[in-house]
Image (cartoon, rainbow, N blue to C red; front, side, top):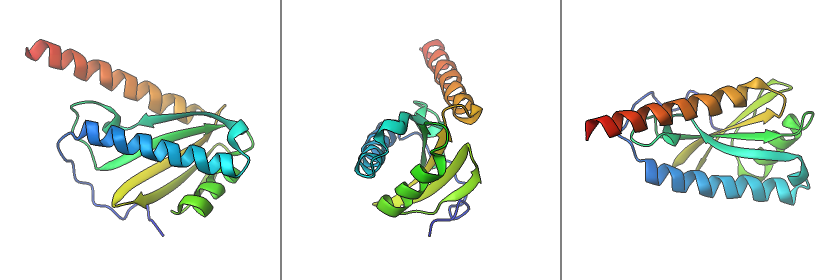
Length: 142
């Protein structure tokens, strides 16, 4: 069982390249799990979100993914991820479940959202704003 509150809040210097590699590996695992369960047609998109998705930004060493699925399939998709990959499913509501899990020492928070839920849209927009802001800050430092 992985508890959402297991890890202390501790910021580390950016490990962006490593986090991107870990995101891509987890993305593949999630895609393959949904495909094996016959749910790949409900998959809309998978996004790397949160502070680990922003180059140069200090972050908690937890890689966040937003897995966006067709409306009405959130609970089923989240349950498949737990069954096939491990972790713990937190059933927030019809539009959002969270599956915190560990793989090879890396913590992941896999957020399964319904396509119509605004939660994933907010996290993607926040990530994009932070990426733009940190890119601007890096360019003015030169």
